[in-house]
Structure formats: C-alpha cells, structure tokens
Length: 352
Ligand SMILES: NC(=O)c1ccc[n+]([C@@H]2O[C@H](COP(=O)([O-])OP(=O)(O)OC[C@H]3O[C@@H](n4cnc5c(N)ncnc54)[C@H](O)[C@@H]3O)[C@@H](O)[C@H]2O)c1
Image 1: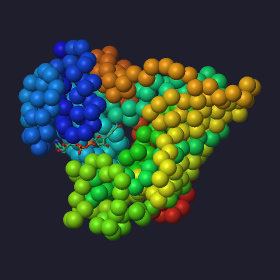
Image 2: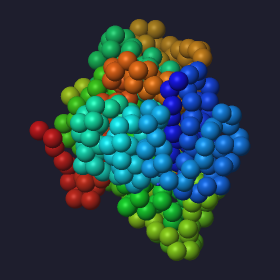
Image 3: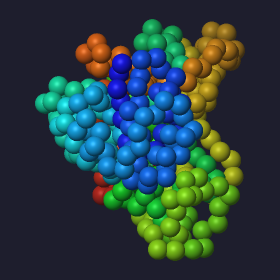
C-alpha cells in the first residue's frame, strides 16, 4: 500500500485530488488534514476510505507509515508545509504555483534534492491529453518552426475571494498572473520543448476593485474566502506581457476582471507550416499551410488530476523524476517572478 496524507481540504482537494486518490488502486489515505476540522470531517464523510481527520499536519509527518503528502493549502503555506514534510522524510505533491516567490521555490527544490525525495508540482495541464498531443506534434515538426505563441486568459469581473488570500500578495504571490497565468505560461514553455528564457517585459494592473466595497461582479469564485469589509486587494487583476525564449516568442493577456464581457481562454501556436489553437482545458484545432483546412480531432480527454497523481506515485516508486518534478517547473516560476519584477520596475529584464 502507498500511504498518503492530504493537507488542505478546500476546493482543489474536494474537486480534484480526493476524487483521484480514492480511485487509484493501492493508495491508502491515512489522513485528511485541515486547520478547519469541519472541512476535513466533511471530506471523510463524502469520500470512502479516509481513515483519520487531523488539524495539525505534523501528526501525519511524524507517522512512519506515511509515504507521501499532498500539499493543497493556499500558496503561502506551500513552502513551510513542503519543507517540513521533506525534512520528515516524505515525498511531496504540492499544488501550483510552487510558492509565492522564485527564491523560495529554489529552496524547495534544493531541499527535495538534499533529502532525496520526490517533489512534484500540480501544473496539471502537462497531463492534459491535448497538451501532450501538441507537445509531441511540435517536437515532430508537424507545424514546422513555431515562431510565436499567443495566449489569452481573460474573464469578465470574476476576481476570486476579494479581500482574502487570493487578493493578498503576501499570501498568494500575486493575482491573475500567478493564479491563472502559471498554467498557461508553464504549458507554453513545456509544449515548446522546455523553452529557456531570454528576456521578458510585463505590465500588471489592479484597476477593477481599487475600492473593494463598490466592486460589482457577476461571478466571485472562492467567495467563501472573501473579506471585502476588512481584507486586502493588492494584486493584479489584469496583466499583459511579452517573453522571448530560445524557441519562440510568447505574448499574453490575462484578466480576472475586465470591462468586456467576452471570455477568452486559448493558446495559439503559430508555425510556418501550420498552427493550432488550443481551447484551454479542451480540444485544439489545427490548420495546415498545405490544405488550408482547419481540423479538430475528437479524442477522449482523461482526467488530468488523476493522471498527475498517478504519475507522481509512479515516480516515487520507480525513483525516476517525472515531467512535473519541481526541477522541470522552476523555469516557469522564474518567469512569473521576473514578469512581476518587470512590471514593478517598468522595464524589460534580460537573462543574457
Ligand atoms: N491545479 C489547479 O488547477 C488548481 C485549481 C485550484 C486551486 N489550485 C491551488 O490549490 C491550492 C489550494 O486552493 P483551493 O482553491 O483549494 O483553496 P481553499 O482555500 O479552498 O483550500 C485551502 C485549504 O487549506 C487549509 N489550510 C490552510 N493552511 C493549512 C495548514 N497549515 N494545515 C492544514 N490546512 C490548511 C484551509 O483551511 C483550506 O481549507 C492553491 O495553491 C491553489 O493555487 C490549483
């Protein structure tokens, strides 16, 4: 049996990882842990096979039966829990983003190496079927030379949990760029075949809820964490930037909130022999320069959370680092950090 503890029983735990872990053969969930006992109790009631509810994660770390822990807490908690778990000799699956800064992300990678433990990060799109296909098509040269990637992740007035952890930079590391952008930009660097950064420029804005009490919205996801009366909103709700890599250039625009009620969630890969538009989370359409036709293939999209959890367990068992190992995600963490720095300092930042 592969024995695990899940730390943090919020949305991603309930919607993604408990459904995945309870489906995987040979996985024993010994602990569900949350600071708020009722949340962990509710998980134990709703999912089969969870043995214990705890509120102090150190109980699970002290248990020699526990092989690995899932860290599914808010971003700023990732660092402490992951470092404690690695030092206690546990393998760790930690949700994205790695943590609130690149410097701390590097420390986490170093600690995993020092302890000889696997540390994977939940950039789940690397396990999305469409991303895997596009990655392989690019590697095979199906689109010719990919010269540019254009990304849009924009939504209408949907800042999450206004005033709470999501909009408090100290706790989240940033707004829409780190929360949504991490998926899109990591996916682009990965699909390009592990692109290395050359230079970046970025502008991040916080315009829509400067006065939190008068902010109007259609959708506030994570509303249970909001604190509009007394909380903080010091993160970006709109971001745009340009990235040069050794493989292709990347332009992007992202909005948690904007005054245009047209949602856009896509990534365009532009090659000299063909191109593809990936509908985020779905299928992609590709165009060939020869046929001038657009084709959208139909294929089954397996659950990416199940795939990433299974792959993590497999990598612990085999000792072979997986594509979601922290070592392979640090470039994306560096990118996010540098984009924020570029915006703060209002200049382009070069790595060369
Ligand atoms: N991969 C994805 O697509 C995806 C989607 C959503 C969220 N996430 C990430 O997952 C993480 C959690 O997000 P969420 O939306 O589930 O948040 P959430 O607020 O719903 O849940 C977090 C839970 O962690 C608990 N917690 C905080 N500190 C703790 C501690 N020290 N010990 C035990 N429990 C603690 C909180 O009480 C809360 O129940 C974030 O890092 C987020 O970026 C990833």
